[in-house]
Length: 288
DNA sequence: CACCATGTTCCTTG
DNA sequence: CCAAGGAACATGGT
Image (cartoon, rainbow, N blue to C red; front, side, top):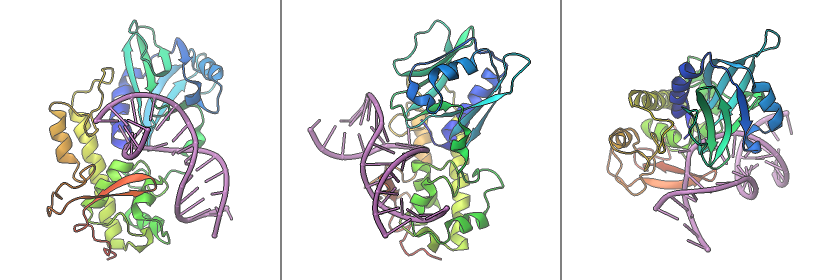
């Protein structure tokens, strides 16, 4: 369920529910997700700790945990949902889901991280945050900075955006959406974007992400339920799909008319990921 | 069986 | 050292 907006909405949901609660017991069910740290070690470090702030950086969730006793330092658990991860609180007696990766006993409730595809993470290694670019919704993300980061790259601009070093948190869906809104071809070499297009692209990235967060925040969420597909095409149900269709203008619309000019939307593959774009609204020669 | 899927990391090559 | 390309990871849906 990732991409920055989904993670942001999840963090806002979890932060007030976790703050101040103590971990009575921690269990790692899928050792792979804790990576550099042994499962037993993580379980031991977490036991007895109390949740402090829960924050987001790019698509990562950061859980600050106060030490159990008076001695010891706070630690930060770095979580990532990968492609299919979910995190939520469930009533204590509820059964663990089939693909539970980590569960934390909080007394009258349980924090669960489940992940069918096991691409997600839950560990103490903060080095994964090292190469990340600026947060797109802060003032650190400037038009000039974006232009500078794209300059001298011959990689297609869409591939460059997915790299996380130019700007953090833009995933496959919103990369296509932002390029569409700014009228820039995803195939264009990044270094060929002038300051004008970079400024438009920055605005579009911020708009697309902010709208998605807004959308998610205004809907009742049920992270403990079965179908938490709030943000995803084909998974949205009932009233959700109305929001969804209005928000995504090109993603997964291959062959359907462009919402601006009715030209059929095209799909191509870049860096082994699907890209969607309108060949007319996003001309390959949009250098200026 | 084939192909597709919201993401990151590691390895190779230039 | 860096940029870029591709495979790998693992499972489920259509």
